Length: 349
Ligand code: GLY
Image (cartoon, rainbow, N blue to C red):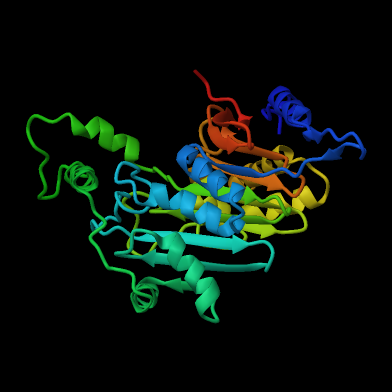
């Protein structure tokens, strides 16, 4: 893969190597590495990592911590890629996907194409804990949520409805829908076509336990019933408590065909750093894209975005994106900030 940015690969690899353990001084005992507590998330997850860290410091289970973190984003009407306020399918209905995975019990739960519930990640956790299944979809997922006391609500905000309506009105000049005559929105609407948002959040607690969650409204204006990678264990999320955790955002279809998060954890099991594991997984996905020529740009490179986030048992973390310019949120126990993700291909200016 000639365009793989080796310089960037090395640079961020070294940066991670430099994030060493903090040693506790003691007059009597030899210095012991202090247990790390870490929360990482996609770039829309700074408040999620902040909240997750607060809870981890109070001794919360790492799964409860990451779910409470992403709930803030699921409930935020301004994030058009997750939960309430997420962009709807082509018929104007918001359909949500989410998965959770708990390292200490190696258990997981997920919901897909769930309508009417703001916090699908909470329902995913109930699927894990309160039934003998791992994934519930559509009407069945909604019935299950309501049985557990969730309130069915309209998830389509006015902003998301207007963006959807403008998308519909500008799809074709040969149908019966017209956009308003004076209109600023179409340019903004274009930015949402092919938009795959999502939040992934991963955590390591002071006991060395890992957990993760991925939650999304999926591809904007998708076909009703379309399910992406987020609720699929092994694709949008995977946790092995002996090794590490990984999750993704971006084009779910590409990830579904390659079980990306499982690949990332497998690469970490082979000894690769979290960042290298993410890059190697992206490289495999980029290579497989040759079988789908409609997804290649004129240089033969994938013309979609895909990102992986990874955290290992030692508290090392990293993220990588198919294309340069991506960030991710990290709370390393000292500070909570966005960091630059490594990348496979450099975007042309
Ligand atoms: N990765 C989110 C989706 O494709 O739905």
